[in-house]
Length: 525
Image 1: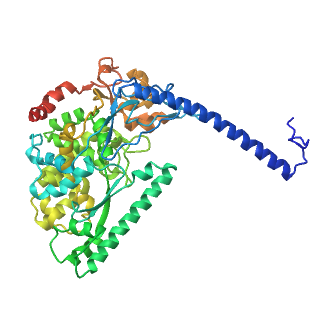
Image 2: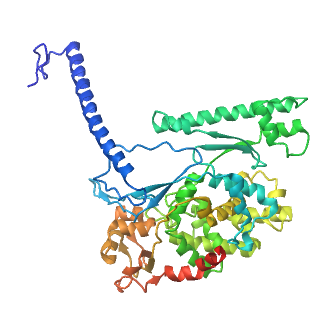
Image 3: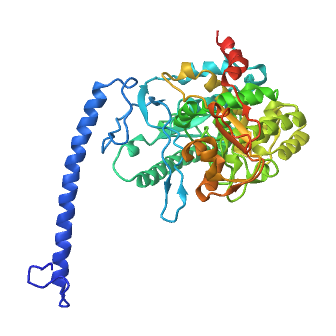
């Protein structure tokens, strides 16, 4: 029996407000003691971690296991224009767990497994970096060279992918993206106190406030009769738009209602560089077998940053961002299976899609844009503008449906191609994940998803790692249809049960490198 200060037992019927206040005070005191004790342990663990961090080389230091990880990791303040590049070890696949109901809960794909960190500090001059848009070492095929008329537009996207990070909001002109009004940086909010969602809303409010200031300054300029003695923001905006022809007041008025902000993509691009190498040899090999240019294999950099979990607000999924309606008839999409999530199966779909579009349109710029805008819309725009290339459509198509994203899709794509081709010159000390050496085979009969672990002699985590479309199927142990293609490590192909699977298909990474990467390596000389 627990007794209170006045002698009343805890379970007594005689209960007063004074007793309640006393109990609350005891609970608060116990909580404060627990927090103080936890803080002491956390501080000690932090000091041990920092001592290890200082005494160890970023690249050579051993990986930290889950049992050895410190209670608190202090993130250093990184100077502006600095990249933190993750140097990956062998990927660590987390274990699946079962819920009380018996459902198998698979771990999310860890795009950045337990890794060591190396800081690649590279002060980049955007003018110096833009020289790579001219392809000085001839690493890009002639089909995707950037024509002079697209240099400014592609240069804007090149800066977005290589210079501006996740806290840089580039405020620019909608019709002329290369005219940048200001770059609003929110690092100071991220480094402050508060919950991440609180910081998120603070950053949005701060960016919105800065955009309003720019808009008001443009409106003031549109009403001025003289532009002499301009100062501050007005002077900056006036100089930024000096290259635009026409009546100055009309130019500023038009800009005030055609302004947007673009979030920097450098951090996502760095993550994509690390993660993409798992799939690029497979993608390149398949595209080459279809007679497609290797450069098209870089489209997922724009679509999803090679994020396997990418899912857009309109329902597009996977690294190739395939819509449910587009996948119908080519990929399985139901309650238990979604083949759009498979990097391998979606690659086969994307190759067929791009090859068909090029055959119809006859221009790679149009075919790439059709992947985003739709083949029907591009054919209509081509007919209305009498266009021969994508540049004609960009300059002549005034349809509201041909919005900012579609208008700039090809420019961002060629910018990414050049940024990836010259990533070793732009970013330093990037180590990419090893390629997945895969094989595949079709099921001869319908089986339960979880039985693949025994048939392939793999853990359920490994089965999921090679077959991302099986997430729901593995969780519910759903039945897989006859003829369903399964991917697995190539070294398992010889031990495959021929009564359950047909003849396995092998994808040799060494052969792919000989056929595809050799061309690029020869261009690097």
